[in-house]
Image (cartoon, one colour):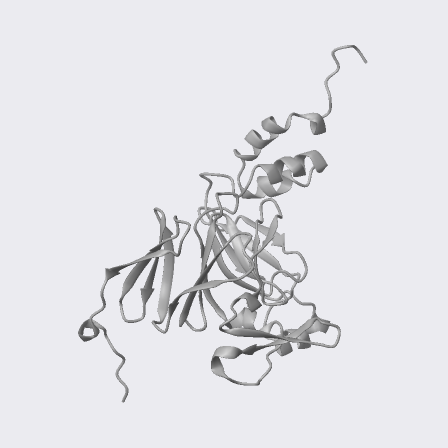
Length: 277
């Protein structure tokens, strides 16, 4: 080989590889990281979803378990912890792509925000999963909702179930049970790479609203009793609407407790109530 022989594709500068990743659509971005270790590292360094790309619709596999394992599906009432999901291009419905989650990290999907999926794992703890880079970031455990959930531990010190402390009951739920029903909606203030991104959770059938920052060890409540129906993040504030039509917002920008503001005060006279015959 001559003195001007070029290096292999795996030796391309990482800054160039990152620029290439940002130009790719979802399937190409996922395939990019599988080429070689250096390209995988560049994909991880590129961050979340490629910016300004066509949106994709995610759906769980209709039948993730083999025929011999169907009894497991009925017993658990959820999909396989190593399930494969299907991503479908909204502009080209016939174009699909499949992504598998790490085993034990996808018992239930609780939301999607800023290119990240918010999943409940096999212990019902929330984790952030990036399908583009395979990055996995744990959020505070479900036992961090200390006013709601109490862990039940076995002889070896491992969690074997949970009790709902707020209901004053001794019934023990399986470790995966709260992951399917405790979380109503989860929203991020931004990608986890941003300055201490905030995660807001509507939980306990909408009766509680709690938050945590990336790296925290527990969740903090910001609202009790008023039943929240939905929440979004917009221009520096979280907004939550209750089932009574009350709209409130929270600013988490300061170092102290979040600043709350009532945007729309509800009027029960204007709330449509169901008629029972």
